[in-house]
Image (cartoon, rainbow over the protein chains, first blue to last red):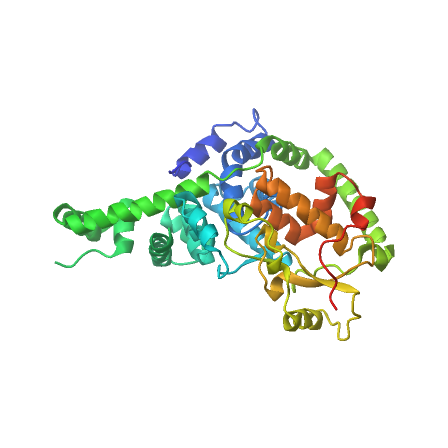
Length: 176
Length: 248
């Protein structure tokens, strides 16, 4: 489940093992892109962005990373930094272009309900109806972020992350 | 025996508890079958959620990487920005001088972001097209006109249209409705109805995911028409397409 290296040292290794004279900053950013594009895109989608908008946000994130590194700013915990910038940019884009609102199913026919009983569908549907903070905490946990990193990305407390995950689990177990 | 709270069971499983509390919870779990079972259930739910999240189908990375590399190279970046600036300026000119008749009244994102029901693709396709669900109560239609500042709509001039149609999971909610000129303009209700039919066919054939179709309709239905019919302008056969009745 935890697919992303959690140790910030791994990132530093990625960046520092590349001697400046041998590998350009552009290559470093591209290497980071190859590692983090999919996790960041999934995160952007969990915030309700369309794939095309998510891709544009990711491009902005890595252009910002390029500027960040070129300015000699800290390389500590760049993974959290990437998710945090992605979160901010995605929210800004979403303000300009609201996502469709999901409304409760009051009109599903018995036939629809019967077919929707498949576990995967139920889980997917249950996740879609979670409050955003709970859904996003689940997404970031699935991407391998530690609770303190999730707290930093979302600007909430560590306890807030744990409680959001607990509530999400409760709702998933009710609905799925 | 006082059992451990769910969030602490979760934190224990994720290695997030520290100090004495981590030790205490471990000791409790060793002795308490109830909490061990509960922790397993929590992890099972989280595992399903993580699987659902990580198994999302994403567009291939190659094109995105190439685009990023082009934008990162200073010389190319300057050229890209210059071309983009020129393109943006050209678009602005086109928009400013485009006759209103060509576009008709477009849905405004702040009034009509789109709203969908919770329904699976299989369920939606299994029930066939639902013509009853397309009927919009008069009072709802009046509310939609009011939101768009149309106080005395001409009968048969508009279709109060679903941004995301019921046949593609759209909800009968004012956030999913807008007054679309029925015959007026190039991109009118008849053309959009043709697109909706095409998208439903593709969704039910499994060639377009339902949520993608919903988002494309909500965000830029004209762009979606151009993409799926491969035509910059509405095809003549769609200009005369009749599916939904105008509002009277």
